Length: 82
Image 1 (cartoon, rainbow, N blue to C red):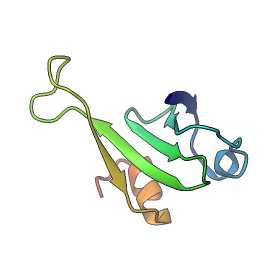
Image 2: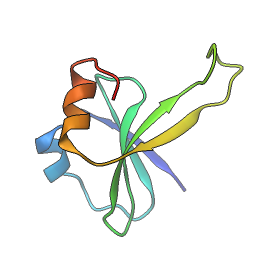
Image 3: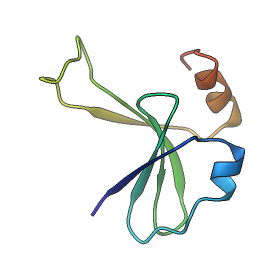
Image 4: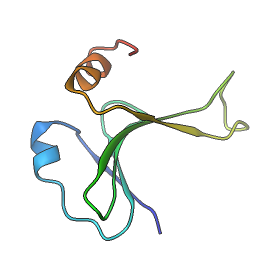
């Protein structure tokens, strides 16, 4: 079962993440569609969820995993598209 939670993704939140027993997605409260996927093994991946094309509710969501680099988080926070 997948669990979704909302947090403000930052340095403090990453160091204080609880241990998870099933795959969990922590979505950012400030940036829609941006999140952090945590697995029970302790692996963390940044993700972006979006609706391709014209978007809208009739289009299914897609999820893209981002490489884990500090510059990506900084770029997304400041409105740049990496």
